[in-house]
Amino acid sequence: MADAASPAPEQTPLNLLRPFLLLAYSTYYLPFVLLTLFKNGNYKPLLSFSDFKDVWFAHFWEWFGPRSREFAAPSVMPLLRNSARGVCLDIGPGSGEWLYLYARASNPSITKIYGVEPNPGFHAPLRTNASKAGLSQIYEVLGCGAEELRTKGGIQPGTIDTIVTVQCLCSIPTPERVIKELYPLLKPGGKWLVYEHVRTKFQGDFVGGWQRLVNIIWPHFFNGCDLCRPTEEWLLQAGPWDSVDLHAGKGEGKYDTVPHVIGTLTKAAA
Image 1 (tube, rainbow, N blue to C red):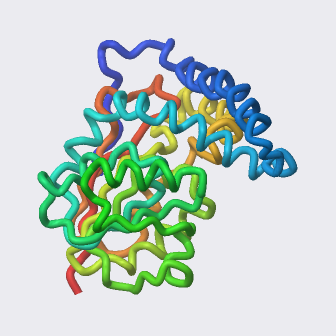
Image 2: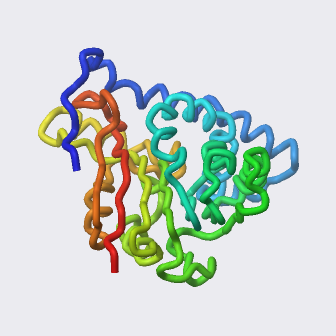
């Protein structure tokens, strides 16, 4: 796995303030969510902070997701386009902003996609985006968590050709356990495609403490997203891999509070 790259020339300490711009976007959308709930007479989410955060994030991400996609596209497009094959697990797809990359025209080897999305607020737009991508016949939404795939999703070990995790392992509960449970589902030679937020490599610099400080409030605004998870380490420890090609986000360095790991892991042959 490649180490984090040195800061690119355009990197400045001002990058440390970027999380507050994203937090401001989420906060700005809050009144629209409340207005929608009252307009529809849907007061139930207001009785549970956890349920309310799910609704808040679903509405917010339906607006912000496509904008986030534009920012991440240069990294995610080469990763997903023509890389997924066979039976795929699309973990935490949200509203399906990346489904156009699975379109049959450019990915004819895909035979089935399971969209594992526990937040019911995303299911309608997810199915709509699957249809727009021409995937309605092969895309099936599983309304359960990744940790429930065997018990509720009916997914058996050794049946999956491709696992895709794009900005979802940062918010899944007990991610280390989930990663270990997902690994057996891959066939020998199966691929795991990754684009995830991770803990900064620069723990000895200011950004290490800054990231932990921002992370105190960040999960409440982004549906449980945790900025400080060593996700790439957990992936490497999940089981034997034939090959690992993981690297840091392009241009990311010691001033990035929301760094990424990108790449592919190929499961060892039996």
